[in-house]
Amino acid sequence: QKLSIPVIASINCIHPEAWIEYAERFEACKPDALELNYYPIASDASVKGEEVDKALFSFVKKARKATALPLIIKLGNNYSSLSYNIKKLEAEGIDGVVLFNRFYRPDIDIETEEITSRLTLSTENEIGHILRWVALMSAELKNLDIIANTGVHTSASLIKMLLAGAKAVEICSVLMQDGLDSISKLIEGLEAWMTKKGYSNLNDFVGKLAQERISDPMLWERTQFMKSIMKGN
Image 1: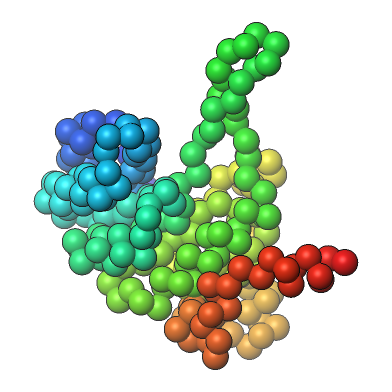
Image 2: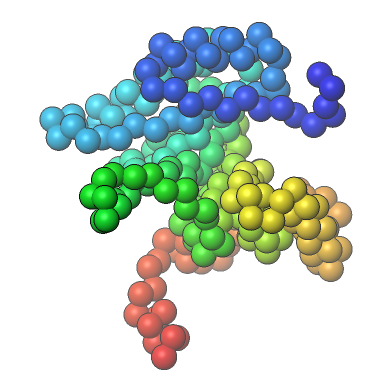
């Protein structure tokens, strides 16, 4: 209540019942929106892919009924048809989707021969996969916003995500590396670029390079392996 900026509660649970319980508890605190970090690991070989998807949408339906707040789902990218799932999230009344949840990965300490977890910060080189999916989906969605996550370290990477169609970005690693001052640097770089380009409003260019809005839509789907090698030489 003391802030002029939106406050979004981000929830991470394991059991579906706990998600709903925490969503209801957070709603009582009156945040501006809820973000649910959905993270299934389909490690059971007896479970088919469609069952993994069904579990996602069963969870989404319950979460949507549990709160009237704007609801954001933070997804991983391990789905057989991301485009189908994102469109279905929109149909279920979800207000936003974060692409993608960047999960901590297990590691092994070869000296102690034990399983460990290691905090690995993102780099700007990781934006390509996210950039592609933001551009592929952003112009297809009318009632669901895409939030880009992972690899936004500079104003250039922020601008790229916006051009692809992201309505917002999430940052973490850059804050841990460079501190809170990195926020003002990102904004100042964005504003300087907008002035240079003659843009007065974000709506002037957000989604300008989404797949449906460029002359060669296949540019976002091609995997130019050989061309990249030749260019490198």
